[in-house]
Length: 62
Image (cartoon, rainbow, N blue to C red):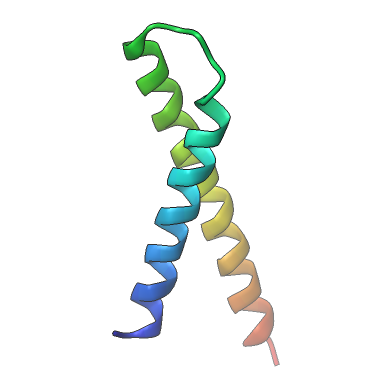
């Protein structure tokens, strides 16, 4: 499997686990919990993609 696809799956997994962890202790109703999960998921995914893009940029800056 190509390396970029593996990295994207890793970002997906970390974002899903992180969002689940951030929402786990909350006592809100189910629809609110799902909306919070989606928000945390995308926040974590964009942060990771930003970091990966910065690392890629600085590696190829030479």
